[in-house]
Image (cartoon, rainbow, N blue to C red; front, side, top):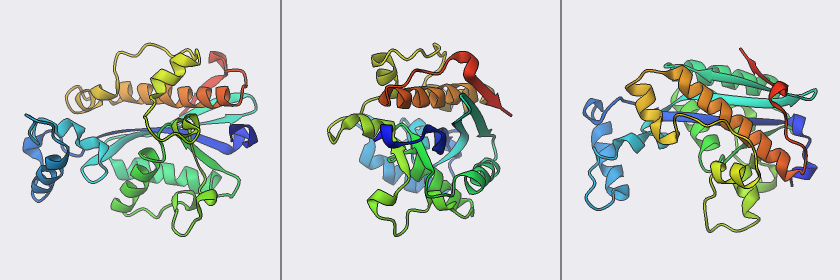
Length: 235
């Protein structure tokens, strides 16, 4: 499928999320009761809802987005723009404006790794929670499967096999895509945000993932990788 897509029509993206409250003890009612109920289905033996609260950020009902990094190809360069901050509604409004201005057309696509199961629905759900109208490219109501403008680098790698999850890290390693060594991983985001209050560090991590997704897509097309001097961060 990648070979049929004009790469300049694709917006690559990645999101970083955290629990909506810093710690279990600060979760207000009725969300505390509802988290306990949710956790009852996902706790392993010996775990409690409090012990796994750092995972709450992966659920749109109990988490929030702190960064959306997006990247696009234009005239041989790859430009990355991030929307981030403590105020989720503000960053979502900024991202919605980008989609409304440049990606609400039938020939435009969104691409993420595991995006169909995580990034795209998470963004859509949090926009609704924040009272933001969904941009047309995120509004899937009534669309047939072949009309959905989502590309997913993990799904593309499956080739119809739905038995396993393949991480972005594994695929970039497999394809020899150079990625800078990070001092944090996805598991550290909760701590770096709520304890270290280092949002800039998280943004850099998110931007690296967007670049890695774009590079992987190029590999799927058997195209050359983009070089470091072709990558630009847009303010």
